[in-house]
Amino acid sequence: MFHYTVETNQAIEEAMSSLEESLKEEKFGVLWHFDIKETLQNKGFAFNQPYHVMEVCNPQEAQRVLSENQMVGYFLPCKIVVYDDGGTTKIGLPRPTALIEMVNDPSIKDFAQDIEVRLITCMDRAV
Image (cartoon, rainbow, N blue to C red; front, side, top):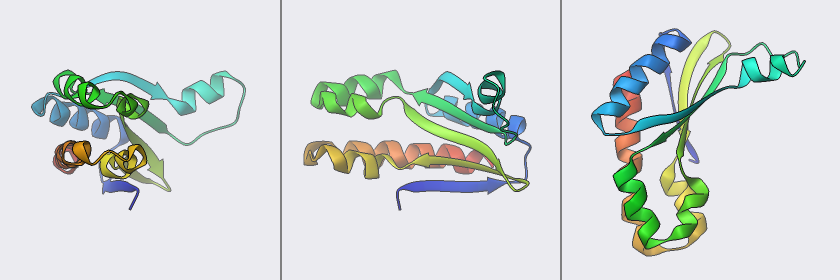
């Protein structure tokens, strides 16, 4: 599958806070938080679904993989979304292993697998 998505009974804000704490344990920080609902509404669009994009990064790992293949920067920072889907809060991400396939560089597949496992662990702990 291209993505990994989990459901939680937490409200959006609580899920985002829990996720941020879990990410810190793996030395990932949130570089940027994009509130799509707010941005679209500010631009005059009727979009009422809470939808947040969090761009996360572990600087040490980013430096390591960019030293191997600069094209990986096309996928950095990693994105995790938190959104409401019919009353259910979901947390999801595109799988790094799926994205890295597009680079076609076998030397960094293990790296992508490691990052994917760590991010999924963070998501699972946050729910």
